[in-house]
Length: 222
Image (cartoon, rainbow, N blue to C red; front, side):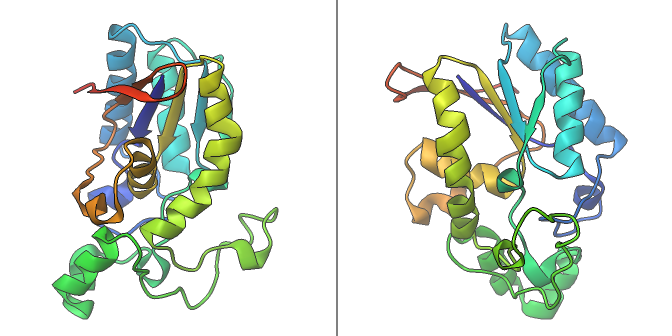
C-alpha cells in the first residue's frame, strides 16, 4: 500500500505565493489539517511501516504531526531532496496574482499546469548552502513538471518500490507538484492529462497494489 499526502497549509499557501524550494512553514491551520489526516488514516485502520518526505520544513512538520496522530512517532523519517516540491525558478516567493499581472494569466497558467514548460530561471542560485551534498550543477534553477518527475524517479525506484515489493505500507509526505508527477507514474497518465491532476492539502490518497505492483484501487480519505 502506498499513501500520498501533501503537506498541510503553509504560510506561502496562505499568502498565495509560489513556493517550490522556498522553506515555508505550516500555519496553525496546516498543523490541524495534518493531525486530522493522521486521525483519518488511523480511523481507517491503516498503519505505516515507512515514511518518506522532503527536506522542506512544511513537509517534515506534516510528517511528524501525522505520525503523532497515528501513535507512530517512533518511525524514522526518510528525507530526500528528490521529494522536494517543484522549483519555480524566478517565480519563487512571488505572489501568484502579481505574477499574472506581470506575465499574463495564460502564461502563468501554462507554467503552473503544463507538463514540460519551465518558468524563468532564478538569476542567483541561493540553495547551495542548504544542499552542500549536491554539486551546484545538480541544483535546479527552474523545473517543469517533467523535470520534477525525472528528479523523483531514482528515489522511487531505489527506495519506494523495494519497500512496496516487501509488502510494506509506505507513506510519502511531499508537495503538490511532486505528487502530481508521482500520480502520473502510478496511474500511467499521459502528459496531456497533467493539468487535470489536483492534490489537496493534507488529504490522504491511498493506493492498493497486487503482488506484482499493478494498481488495484485508489481511495481518498476525505
